[in-house]
Image (cartoon, rainbow, N blue to C red; front, side):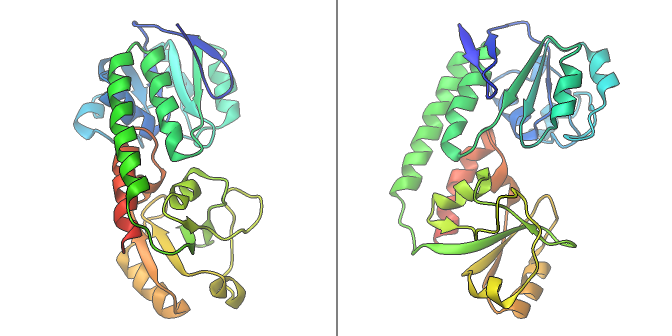
Length: 259
């Protein structure tokens, strides 16, 4: 069978694939599909499941990829993501890697297509089908769960400078599942912003993500006193990771909606 990735590239099933994953959340999914033995390279941010990925060679970060290391590993496939990896990296890899598999989930439900793509290309169709069934069940529970009134929440991912997310992001669409929207701060996907009375008046609360900036409860306490609005620390992995962690993410959303 043939499987189409996010760029429309057609891939065929390959049971002998040698995989380099440059997407931490997808590295975890590949391991859960039973493909750990075929992963020959990962980024330093690919940390789940730790005991499984620890022996796999690191090839840099998601943005600062070491092309020479990847070349030495001789992969047949490199798995990438449009948001997390850069196009020049993909172009350079395409010169010596036969297959570049590009992913781009835009909303939680897109994890089904992601799992089927990974399961199909790497010959783990049944494992992917089982995972999809578990996701469908968890998604149905989220849809049926009680939710509070709609709210506008500012989701912060960095400070110095302060940065947030646009509505055109996976995280924003996760929040929409429980009726929370982020403020419209323009077309930039991860815009910088300044605290102003207008911004504060237009939101119901603030969410401080635990990644990529390591916000803590101490940050939340200080900011809440400064702006006079509720500030909540949230688990960035639960909100932004695709694949395996999205199952936990759906459960996390149910809990978040009840706070």
